Structure formats: structure tokens, C-alpha cells
Length: 356
Image (cartoon, rainbow, N blue to C red; front, side, top):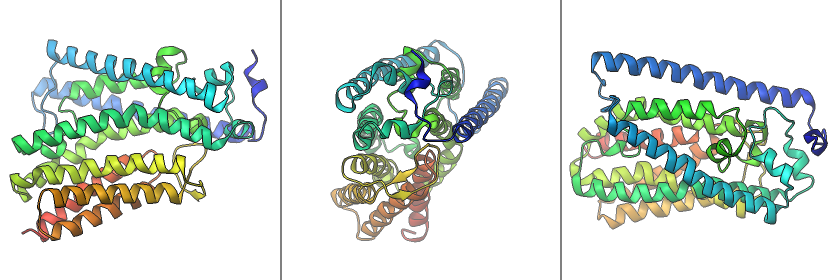
């Protein structure tokens, strides 16, 4: 079937070409970053120094097994499950044809892909809800399980590396996973669709995979920011408060980020124009309010539940406001990086100047 027949030219060819060039620039940037990261890994292997950032960097049986299991479970098996869920929703809830679904799960950089041509024929709200379920279904389930497991672990062990709980210690893991994401960036077919499909929004158009790759690359880069911050946090706060700080950094970010998209898709009117990587960059008051309320309730629950002094209530409010502002104003694709970093910095300032 001729895929160009599915697309009406509501967006000029020059605009679509510019979006493809942006997607290519994101790919080249991620490629350069991972090449440098790989070179750093070889240097670490040769010198046996992790510089306090990566505790594991060797290639051994355990490392290979860990990487293999992680890729097969999270990116293949878990990806296939949510690929199927999103495919069913696009079929029966939105109404996409088989060819339109194939385009939606493709790289979108070979054949024409114009978001306006889909929203002119189908409900934009239903497309957004489907995008939200595929994206949040894949990530929020595992993120919440991981958070509560690590929260309980930090509460018990009170390790000085508590602030880095969501960041892998393994440089080998980071390098291999990044190369796999790069390898599937332009690829089509079922496996590539499982890797990128659930979290690649229809509403992001040609730039959907660019958005995903940017998030993944910044997540790897975040280790170089969060590890020294985490070490400083372990000095400022006593062990008995590690779990609360961990929750305020990571839990509030997860809750705000998820509920902002859920509330925006279900209740919001997408009228707030924002910057970022996506064909359609708009957010809503409904999503922003949902994220703020969710983060505030979560932060207060942590602070009050752990019986912390009143000053911590002020910290909880500031964290909720910061998460909301950074989620709203950070360019799309970068908000994860800025929200987690902002939370850590706020906690550090609180510990240094309020608790001291």
C-alpha cells in the first residue's frame, strides 16, 4: 500500500524535513555522547578507576547476565506487552487502520508522518489517552515497584549511596543499553516497535523516537551529576533521614511526572504552548494541577508519616512547586533530568542551611 496516500499535506514538506533533521541531530548527539562514554569505559577498564561514579565496569559473567536480562525483560518482554496494549487501543479505541498502526510503530523517518492528518480524522483526546497509557503503563508500573522496594531498602540499610538508588552503578550496563537504543533508532519491524513503540507518542510525530532517545541519553548523563550530589547529601543529612530525602527526590518526581501526563490526557485542554522535542508541544492546566496536587500529597505523606519537624513541611511544599514548574517549563524530553536534579539541589540547600 502507498503510505503517502494516508497523509494529507496539512504540514508543508519543508516542515517535515526540518523535523527529520532535528531527529537526525538528536541521534548524532546521542551517538557522540555514547562514543565518548564507551571510550571512558575503556579508560576505566585500563586504569581500574571508577572515579566514584561507577562502581562496576568489568565484563564478567554476572555483568553479561545482568545486561541480557535487563534488555530482554524491560525492553523486549515488557515492551511487547505494552506494544500489544497500545496496538489494541489504536485499533478499537482510536480507530487506526492496520497501515496507520504500522506507521505509528515505525521510526516515522522514512515515510511521511503528519500528526495533523491523524487528528483531522480521529479524536485527538483519544490519541493522547492512548499515548499516555502506552507510555505510562510501560514505565510507571515498574517505576513505582522499584521506588517502594528501594525506599524500604534505604529505610533499613541507610546506605550513604541512598540518593543514587534509581541509577545503575554499572558503566557496562549504561554503554550497552545506549548502543542498543541507537541501533534500533531508525529500524522498523516488531522488535524495534517493542523497544520504542509504547513510549513513542503519536502526537510527537516524526520526533517521537528523538524524544525517547534524548530522555535515555540524559538519564545516562545524569549519573555524572547525581553521584557527586548524592555523596554530598549523605554528609549533610543523618542516616535516619535518608529514606525521606530519597522519597522527596525520586518519589515526588515520579508522581508529578506521571500524574501530569495522566491528568492532561484525561481532563486537560492542551492550550499551553511549550518548547521541546515533539511535533506538537502543548500542555494543559489540568495536567499541571494534577501533577502538583499529586506531588504535594505524596511529599506531605512522607514528611508527616515519618514524623519529621515542621520545617520539612515547607520543604515538601517547595519540592512540589519545583517539580511542577520544572515539568511545565523544561523543554519536553529534558524535564526528567531537571526535575530530579532540582529536587536534589533543593534538599541539599535545605540540609545545609536549615538543618545545620
